[in-house]
Image 1: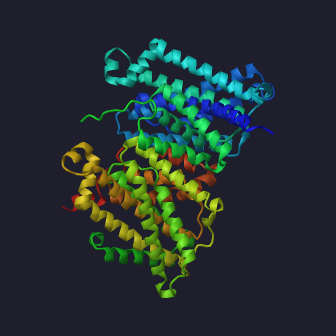
Image 2: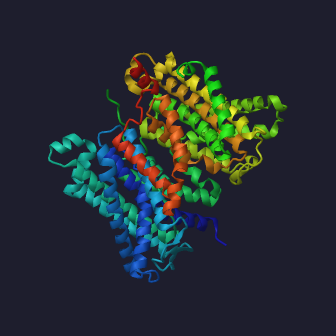
Image 3: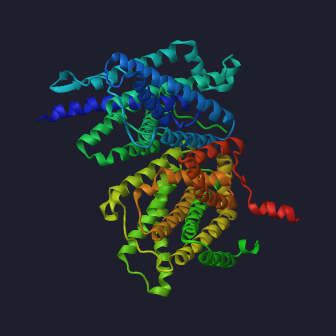
Amino acid sequence: MNSPGQDFIQHLINGISLGSIYALIALGYTMVYGILQLINFAHSDVYMVGAFAAYFAAKLLGLNNSPGIATLAILLIASMVACSVLGLAIERFAYRPLRKAPKLNILITAIGVSLLLQFSCQIFFGADPKVFPNVIEDGVLTEVFGVPLKMNDVSVLAVTLVAMLSLHFLIYHTKLGRAMRAVSQNRTVASLMGVNPDRIISFTFIVGSSLAGIGSVLVGMKYPKIDPLMGLMIGMKAFVAAVLGGIGNIMGAVLGGLLMGLSEQMVVGYLSSTYRDALAFGILIVILIFKPSGLLGKGGVEKV
Amino acid sequence: MLKALKNPFLALLAMLAFGAIVNVAFNSFIQLMLVIILINMILAMSLNLVNGYTGQFSLGHAGFMAVGAYASAYLSTQMPLLPQPFEIFSFLLYALVGGCLAAAAGFVVGLPSLRLKGDYLAIVTLGFGEIIRVVLQSTPAVGGARGMFGIPGPSEPKFIAGYIHASIWVIITFFVIWRVVKSTHGRAFLSVREDEIAAEAMGINTTKAKVRAFVLSSFFAGIAGSIFAHFTNYLNPSSFSFARSVDSVIMVVLGGMGSMSGAILAAIFITVMPEALRPLQELTGVDLRMVIYALSLILLMILRPKGLFGNKEITDYVRKKSS
């Protein structure tokens, strides 16, 4: 049997792997919130559509049973493209007409889009779960202190790391990224400086949605069952992760995601799995009551 | 007609007369729908107090409904009913207890979370709603995830007894909220909605006003839950999910934030529409109802963002014509 220390390392590995997936999806929430101050409820369903896109891509290309790095790359690209197109369409047709409407209306529209995606996917794909293709041969790569380090977890971490580094480069070292940061600080002034806010907002949706697409393939690898309602719970948790880290803050989303994943695995490992879903909301409530701006967020001063 | 809107007893009489007609003229499916409509009306009116009049966005209404439903159902299995002609009083009492517990839950939830604004409040109330559901799901005393069976309900004739019970509460809800909104407290709610900082400058304790609205709204949500529990005789935590909270919010928004008649009409519309679309499902072979529902919600927000009535009442239109 495993020693308590080995158990702990096992939970740690699982937690980081789950947490990095949460972080990827949380990034989508936090980026859209940062730029539009909108909780994009439809984000979790964009993620779900991404999983289905990868599933059908694998089916069409006959990659169902050929695990490998190439398969992973192809599925990632398929899912990212599908998610970007969907995110772009949602922004263009549902959110843009409401740019000047009260916040509540946009929020309800977001819920409407989310319901629309869920129900139409139930009609198109059927409500029964589908088995996600085998993407990576899930062997034991190496052992850390006697704990097996699985191929799946390693590839999840590697993909997440690459995605996050590219995101960091995009936001802090390109012109486009600078424009995104400018629009999120002050849309009017950014537009005076020659930035087209609508284009930047569309671009933000593309980036956020393709991150959700990456997340969906990684989740499909870890838990190979996909169904039209799979986005609900993971979307909620990713959102909590974004709030935990300070919504609108990129680093905060990553930190929040990792913390969420770790604490969830620890609760499942040492307490009971009944409370794994309540935990997310418990964390959320505690953080919002004591530090509503999140761990890394800056407190805003309300002006008249 | 307009007189009935001012006198609760006339209104109750009118509703009972309507119920008597439905009792003889329509089948049990329509009767069931009617009671569900009444329950949804209470939900919509009570949520309107928070979302519409006070301008605070709550997404956890189903949680309070669940508290009321479970409390009242549990009580009724522990306590004997009064004998037949007075039976209705036991149900009124259960509902009252359920409502009070829901109000207490509303106070506990509202006090810390109403300091937050807008989206954050929505998320916290959503979180509380889900936590209430998870707790109920893992409490064996009320059946856990299997649900709670054999809840006593109004006995034969089932429809008319349940209808009377629901009507009484609809009337109470309507008049209490109507009078509250016209009172000093109600003015405070409205001023918080219009401009919180200005309201505070005028000497209104905004947090207190918000908590008051929230507690009252939770009370009536609990009542709605209690009526639901005793009418369906069965409770399951999954019937108080996020989807039901969203339903209530949609009723408020569709009717117009801060319009009582809007909330009532929207409750009727939202309850009837899925059933009215059933023939379409037979025609096309796929269940398009929820897709249409979601699509119409998005279109409504884009094309008519203030809801059907905005913050006007249906009587405003009637009066304009007659004068």
